[in-house]
Structure formats: structure tokens, C-alpha cells
Image 1 (cartoon, one colour):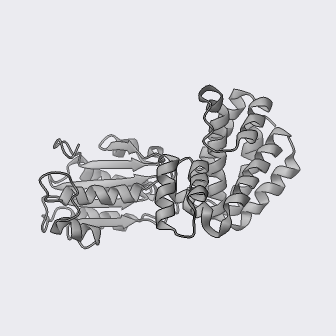
Image 2 (cartoon, one colour):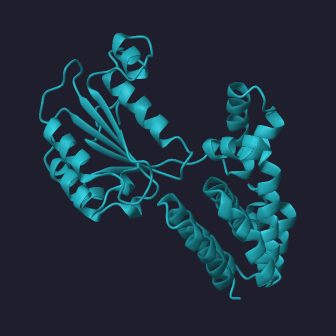
Length: 310
């Protein structure tokens, strides 16, 4: 869109935490201000260098910490008031709004006013966990792009190069397990958590298929101490349930949990597997919104058992 001169004034990048939405937003902003005649961003011109160092006077970045309603309306009002001042150096002013799904309805309506009639030089890049978290009116004035995971080999090469303490094989397993999500893979590798996480996911699936409520409660209670670990386990479970739904057709097991996937396919119907996949997706959304942690643990047990028809 940029190279063809059809860059929209509002772009929404959606995807799970750790997929690189903010990195992509920053690179896109850099490309927009780049002065090179050919490939953009060139990374060499003055504009690119300033953007890379977060010093460009026409690139503005705001982000919520991640909790529900944590993107305050006062910040949005400041953006709206500021946007009508002309750019300093570049042809555009770029506003990156990270975790825009943390805006409440009033904040979204405030940004909607400028999205309806933006200055010709303004570009907004919003990152969200899911487009469903934005008002339909905001979405209708934006181009939505979904960010997905990378090939496991590409992710493993990146992690091994950036983290000397991690081997390529360890990184490959982590990226493969996390369905190409580099950020989630890096978090899972911290403190040697990967083996614990995969075992926990296997145990949860085993408890579901065995209709063992006590074992399920015991497994999920472990997650009560670490919200980030909970998110990683839920991410892995989502991939496992996806494998059980589609793995039989393509033969591809993205999660690397072959035996667990086989057991799920043998013991549960396609309908139950789809409900489990949907339930985990909703639980991840709750976790990203910083829902009450204790209640979330209870909801995990209830939601998984109900989805499996137990």
C-alpha cells in the first residue's frame, strides 16, 4: 500500500501478544518518513535513523499497560488536539496507539472523531489483541491487518542469534510449540519453563479427556502464581486444540504434542474440540485484559469442562 501510494490514514494491526505488532508498527512508521527513492525503510537516511532511535519529531507512540480501560481518554484527547498541528520534518505525522483495545467506549469515540475527518498528513496505527475489541465505527474507518506467527525455523534462528544461552533446537521447539509466536516462545524459554509448560498442557488435556475434575483443578491451580505462565499455557492449549481439529487432515502437528493430540482426537468429538478452542481463545482475551486472576483460574476449569461436555 505504501509503495503504491494507497496508504490508508488508519491501520489496525491485530494479533496475540508477542507476535510483533508493535515492531511492525514502528517499522511501518519508519518506512513512511523514509526519504529513500527505492526500498523503504532504507535504515540509512536521517529520517530512518531518527525513527529507529525513537527521536523522530513526527512519530508519536502511546501505549496502555494492558489492563482493561487502561488507555485513558485524556491521552486520546491530547492526540486529537495535537494532530492538527502540521508535521515538523516529514510529510506525515504518525501516531502509534499500542494496546488500543484497552480504550473504553468513550476513548474510542474520541479517536473516532479524528478518524472520520483526519488531516491529510495524519496516519494512525493501532495495535489490538482482536478487532472485536474495537467499535464497529472505528473498524469501518480503518484497514485491519492480521499479524500471525512465523515459520518455526525463522523464529528459531532469530532467537538463537539474539539469545546466546538458547540453542537453535531449544528455540525451534519453543517457537513450534507457540505456533510461531516469537514473543511467547522467548517468555516460555525464560528460567527453563518450557518443559514444565508442555507437561502442564499435556496434563490438562489428559484431565479433560478422562473427565477428572480433581486433576484439572490441581493442574490449573499451579497457574495461580504466574499470570504470564498462564497465558503461555493457554496459548499452547489453543494450538493443541487446533491440531486436534485440523491435524488429521493436513498431518501437521504445530504444537509438537503428538500423543496428546492423538488422545484428544480419539476421546472427543469435533464439536467438543471446536468448543475447547473457542473457550481457550476467550480465556486468553480475559487474561490479556488483566481479569481478576483468581476468578480466571476458576473460569478455566469451568470453561474447559463445559466445552468438553463434562
